Image 1 (cartoon, helix red, strand yellow):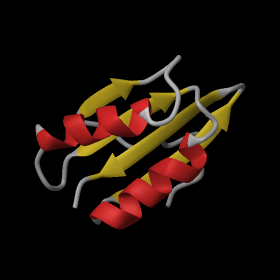
Image 2: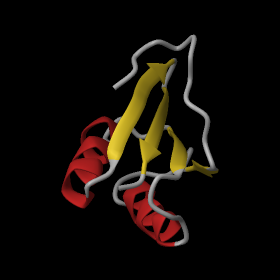
Image 3: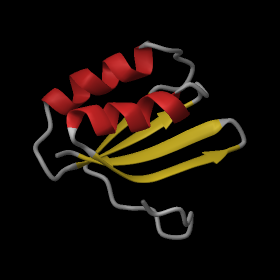
Length: 83
C-alpha cells in the first residue's frame, strides 16, 4: 500500500460518501463495484472515521487491493483496485 500523498494512484471511478455514516459508505461501495471490472481503481472519499476499519475489511473480504489510504483534516481517501 502506498502511503505517500505526493503520488496518488490514478482512478477509473470516484465515489464521494462525505456526510454518510456506517453502513452507508460500504453499501454504496458494494453497488459501485458491481458496475466496475477487475483491475479498475475506485477512489472513495469519506468523512466517517469508521471507514478506516470498514474499507480495509471490505477489501480483504472481497479480494480487492487497497492501494492507498490517507486521512487529511477529517477527510478520508482510499484507492482500491478491484480483484
